Length: 123
View 1 (tube, rainbow, N blue to C red):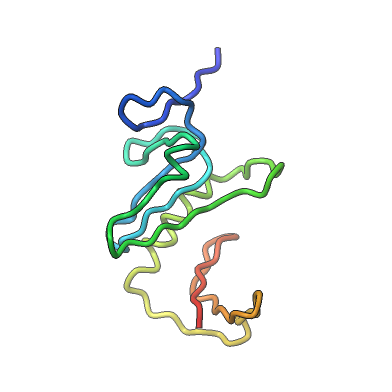
View 2 (view 1 turned 60 degrees about the vertical axis):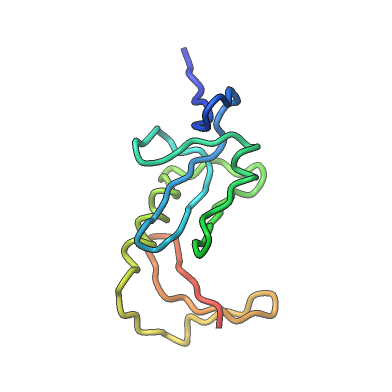
């Protein structure tokens, strides 16, 4: 018997499609594909509520989306991304200019890495 998880929003009966977690120290909300398993400190959201998500004033929203038709990665990327944001807080990072990348006319610098995830900063 397969159970589908419901949206965490009160009175919403739609199935969950995304998972939301907060990194309070960084004032960041991280929204990504539905996590492999339910966590007590994260929220499952349906497509409607995930699309309408807003964060408090001054907060950033990081949306992690998988390309259409891509299989789900074996590691829970949403939790890994939230952990990477937490670890980056307060660290001094030596910027390696060889890691600079040109992307669509904007220059970005890789400032941290955890596994296959990267934290980038616009310059």
